[in-house]
Length: 136
Ligand code: HEC
Image (cartoon, rainbow, N blue to C red; front, top):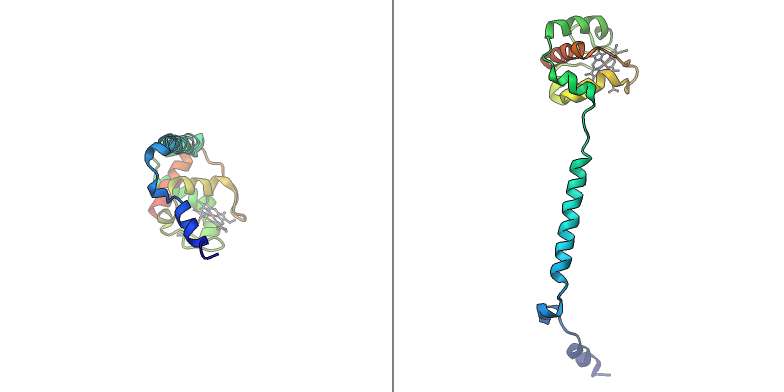
C-alpha cells in the first residue's frame, strides 16, 4: 500500500526526460501544422470579399460634389433634411467618418434599411453623390 506512490514515481517517465530521438515525428508534425496554417491563410486571402463591379466602377470615378448636391436635394432631403441634419432619416453630418466609401454606396443602392428606398443611380451619379456625402 505505502509502496504505491514510490512505484508510480519510478515508472512514470517525465516528458522532458525523453530524448528527441524517441520522438522522431515531432518535426514532421510541426511542419504539417505549419503547412495547414499556410493553406488556411491562403484560402482566406483567395476568398476575401471582392467589391462588386458596380462599387468598383463608382470608386474609380472622380465625383462632382455639386452634381451630388443636386441629386441629394432631389432624392434625399425629404428624409435626411435640407442640409442633411436629419429628419425621418438620421443626420448625415460626418457620415463618411463612420462609413467607408463602399459602405456609403451600399447604403444608397441596397435598400436594406427601410424606409430608405433602394436607389439605382448610374455609376457617374453615384460617384457625384458620394463626393457630396464625403463633404458633409
Ligand atoms: C424615405 C426616407 C429616406 C430617403 C428618401 C433616404 N433615406 Fe437615407 N436613411 C433613411 C433612414 C430611415 C436611415 C436609417 C436606416 C437604418 O440604419 O436603419 C437612412 C440611413 C442613411 C445612411 C446611413 C447613415 C448612417 O449613419 O449609418 C446614409 C449614408 C443615407 N441614408 C443616405 C441617403 C441618401 C444619399 C439618400 C438619397 C439618395 C437617402 N439616404 C434617402 C431614410 C431615407
